[in-house]
Image (cartoon, rainbow, N blue to C red; front, side, top):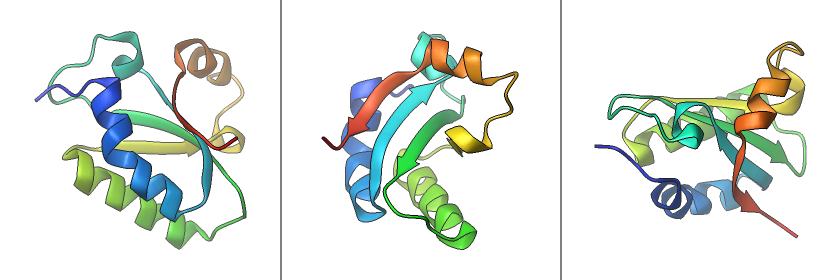
Length: 98
């Protein structure tokens, strides 16, 4: 099943709130509109307070479970500098705390 950006936003917002995420955006094939039903979901997050890698992986697992597909969860700092411009070009906001 193909997920829209709005469907993704609706499903993941409670998880983002739970983990103190201040910003989330989708990039890659989902953001460009050329995702297939089996495509993964690429999500960039900014988090209010530092969390352990184990908590980060737990959040990733919960996102995969709620979306029913693989999620590639990244932070700006984890992006390889050569890929960052391409990610930022595709990036579509999903969630933001103001």
